[in-house]
Every structure is written in C-alpha cells, then in structure tokens.
Image (cartoon, rainbow, N blue to C red; front, top):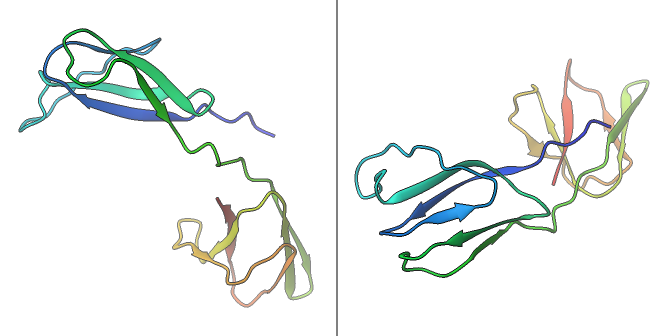
Length: 136
C-alpha cells in the first residue's frame, strides 16, 4: 500500500492587530483587495494536519481568543481496497471498511452512487467501459 500524504488545509485569519502563529508553519503572502487585505489577513498555505488537528496561538493585540485549535472530522477513516473480478458478462465488485460504491462512464465522471450497493456487488457489463470507486 502506498504511504498516504499528510492532509493539509489552507487557513485565513482576519485580524486587526497582533499576531497569529502555527508552530512549524510560516505565513504566505496574501494578495487581495477589498475588506480583506495583506494588512489585516494572515494566510497559512498547506498547513499539515497531524492527528486530525492544527494548533496555534493568537498573540498579544488580537481581539479574539488566546489559543487556536482546528479539529477536522476524525470520523473519517481510510477506505479499504476495491476488488473486481469478471465472470462472463458480470463483474463482482467487493470492498471492506465501508464506503459508498460509485460508478462513472469516464474516469473524470460524472460519478454517481450505485443504488443499494452492498459488497459483494454483481454488475452486468452493458457498456464498453465503466469506472468504479469508493466514496467516503
């Protein structure tokens, strides 16, 4: 199995004065106009999410809270693999660890849920190509 890349998030903070910091991460120049400007917005690009959370601090002069924790939905788990075997005009699709089976006529989609799909799922081959994936 390939090693999974560490998930990342982009974070934007509107601030009047003071500082915002996230350990081990530097700010990225923010370029925009209007109410959000480089002077009042702190931007962190591709912040690594470790153990489902990001932790940092609001420094003196900020008017929000002292401390920062962003928690991502920890209920998400890695999906298992999808197994596909062919028997005549049928495909037997099997998977474990949950997920919703989806299909599409091209690799780019559009992806739709396979109605009432349960592993193992038998599918009759009726078109030249069909793609399958699991969605969390």
